[in-house]
Image (cartoon, rainbow, N blue to C red):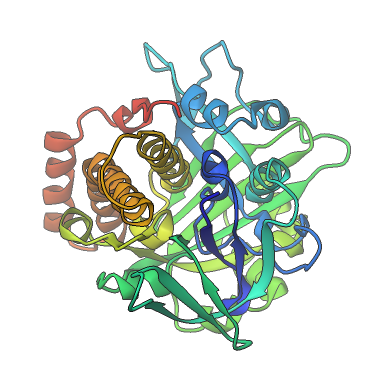
Amino acid sequence: MVVVVVVVEGSGGKVGIRKKIWLPAAMAVLVGGGGKDEFEDASKLDLESRSSVPFACVFHVPTLILACGVHMELNQQLIFGEDTPQALQLQVVFQSCTPPEWKEELRCLKRSDLIQSLADSLPLDTIRFGCHILEVKFDPLTSQPLLQLQDGSIIKSKVVIGCDGVNSIFSELLGLKATTLFASGGIRGFTNYPSGHGFSNEFVRIRKNNILLGRMPVDDNLVHWFLGRPWTPSDSRVSKEPELIKQTTIESIMGFPTEYVEMIKKCDLDDLTLTSLRYRAPWDILLGNFRNGTVIVAGDAMHVMGPYLGQGGSAAIEDAIVLARNLAQVMCTGGSKGSGKEVSQMRIETAMDQYVKERRMRLFMLATQTYLVGMLVDASSSVTKLVIIIALIVFFSDSLRHARYNCGRL
């Protein structure tokens, strides 16, 4: 057995630690490394907590959901037909368009549903809750990572995978530069319609001035929506009070169609979030160091990006699949010389380096496209907008190419 510690972020700086798992199962504990995954309860995952923030994206579904082995559970969360193309209604004019070769699928589900499905596949007693890591050091004799917890205890591990979000302690350990703020903030929520919402299976976006409102159904009763708008000085205070978030959202969409205003008024306060949007610069992803010894990062700790492509969560799942595949391949290869302890650590580091190599250009392209779109949203100068649009046309003329990426299977 190889002791692997996977650290994920929770609220208030708490993290959940999953440890002592068989290596083939490591892929299951890497998903959802973003900063909004919350593990509060000491006995279960609280599906009604803020961990229910949405996870909506366009992705190569067979690769991600099937590779994670949870497709039977998550198939119940589909919003778009699996076999038939669906029209997308975009921007202010609600112009419908069907791409000529629509092979991707757009799905929306609660992040907590994904987390729960993955957690259920783990052996018992592999998850620890309420752990707060104060410091990460390396054993001077074995060079293995040591995690110093707030309660004074120390966890010794052969492998540490940091999925602890935007404010990752492991990103600091690796010397990665701090993330940068966009000028925009994002409000995300769900609205439940007990008698059914009656909306068609379409992803709808409406833009008015500097406000962007999006809506997509999760199932026949539940709808996910989001709103993007400029971040204001009062938002730091507002973000702590769901009722205030609701009020400011309603104020932002005055003049929008009545059905959208009613949707916000009926939203579930427990799932309502207001966050500033952050990103790791594309050049930092291209040049950054993501491994130190057998400590590595994944998810938002590695490549936090704006929500403009809907690829942040997908990229985290891709991280899990690629890292697990490389670890499994290297650890199953025998015949190396040297002591077992030395060879094992060398193999792990080789697998991690291969993971970084595989992921770097994919993440750089995603980060660049997201960065340009985010700058376009924030830009006030017509000249700046024109330059960004030209760059997008030149480098990203196929706007859905990122959704056709296939990271492979385990």
